[in-house]
Image (cartoon, rainbow over all chains, first blue to last red; front, top):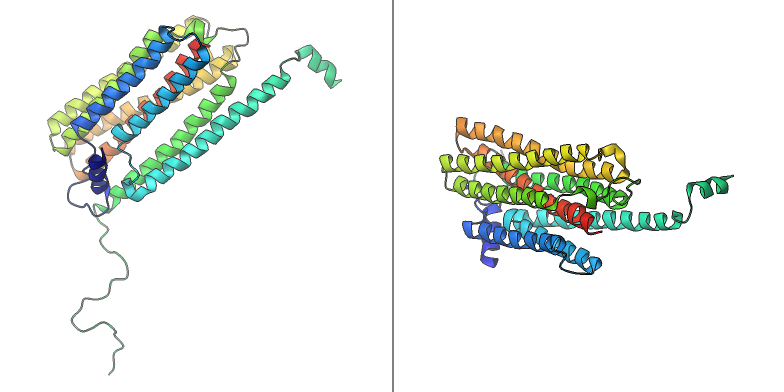
Length: 132
Length: 210
């Protein structure tokens, strides 16, 4: 893996004029990524379709974690991202994006969940009364 | 007759900027630029995911994910996209070897998997419409269709792009410009598969679970 990353960094480096953008992995790295992806896809489908775990919260957390791991697998083995590619700028952009995404997702769900909960006991009728 | 030239005699004229800008300079920056585009696309999907996260349980007394989603069908869809990812990878490997015929073959296979994915998705939508679950039925369905069809549209345009590039490669061969374009599409294609992981996890699996 580390040798692979080194090759990638070299392939994408600005000094590499000879062959165009050499490093996009090898058959082996693509197959590794593919096999890992298949495993990480089959497990969550099996967990949900087979009703393997009784606790749905645990199942939810499990499939979320498996999904996250599979995303990392895709980024590493298919998108060939490493901390070194493009002089580290793609990695910087990725970290920045992930930060924004986490804030946006967690923030939205959190805020709206609380709003929903505070609104919940009120029926439409009650709200109309309060507004008067 | 004094010249105030500080350079020692015999040296070339000083270069104040890099003149060598033709050809290969753009490749590194193209990849970085395209990556930044993907990141901005990622933000679009994040807002749609957030919207779905907020509205995904507002059924308005309409059908819920449990009534609607057909997980085996989604598993097939997922497989199509995953296969297309690896076949695109093989196309890139053949491109590295400058094997035009095999590159085209793997690109064609990738395209077919892509078409299969979009076809299955359209069939699913048609089925949902027949089940009485159009986008305007509830907030859940509005956000569902927005998120999933945005992804489907991306895949459709990816296929269009793929066909365009196949024509280009057929005409002009695996020249540097075509290689660069194929690499951009490669990133785009793998990125869409990555987004689909989020879709099947958050929308389909978690939807059926609740």
